[in-house]
Structure formats: C-alpha cells, structure tokens
Length: 153
Image 1 (cartoon, rainbow, N blue to C red):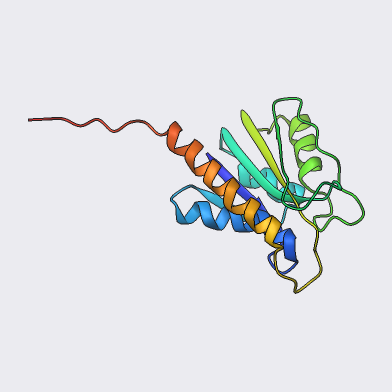
Image 2 (cartoon, rainbow, N blue to C red):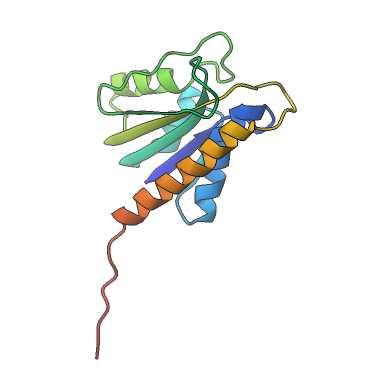
C-alpha cells in the first residue's frame, strides 16, 4: 500500500493529509506527501496497485468528520474556487480513469476541516480525526502483512 497525504501544513486543517502521511511513515508504512495537484498525484501513485489518498475537505459537515470513498466508480466533488490544489484529487481521478492510470485499488479519505488560514494550527477536531484515521490505517495495513513463518529446530 502507498499512502499519499495531500495538503499544506502551513494552512491549518489543510495539513490533515500531510499529518497522516507523516504518522504512518513513522510506523513503517510507505507514505508520500503531495500538494494534491492532479498530475503530481497521478505520478506519485504510478506503479502501485493499492493507494490511499488522505486530504482535507470542506462539505459543511462538522470539523473532524472522516469521509471515505472507494471503488471504480468513486465520485468526489471537483475542486471549488477555494481549493488550494488547483486541479486536485477529483480531477486526478477523472484524468487517470480516462488515461487508464488508476491503481487497481484506490481509496480516498477526506477529513473535514474548518480553518485554512495561513499560519493557523490544525483544529483539535481535525487533529483527533488525524490520530484516529492513522490508527485505523495502520491496523488495516498490519492485517494485510503476511504472517512470518517461524521454523523450530
């Protein structure tokens, strides 16, 4: 599995994806950090069959809510004028689908944010969601690892 954390740590809750990537990397899971720009995302997941993307989202739900999208027909709201990514995650998925460059398994987790001003800290609600999602992803990855074979002499 490759985890791609998207965002900007200098813009409050927009750093949620980056924080998840940093935390899972510390626990031994392959993780990349990306701004979330469409072409950079497609390049980052090239060669991986199982990809997880984590990014901050704004849907109007309470801060800290975690959204999950998965499957071949996954539809994520395309970027809005307030997006920090320009052409972002939704556009990357759409373009990769057209080009035949989607990974075999792609999961997207969106962490609802509420403060995105430059220089602000991550909100406590978003930080709790980062910690919980990190725990869930590392547990899931541990279940996927083969059981080591122990030989007794």
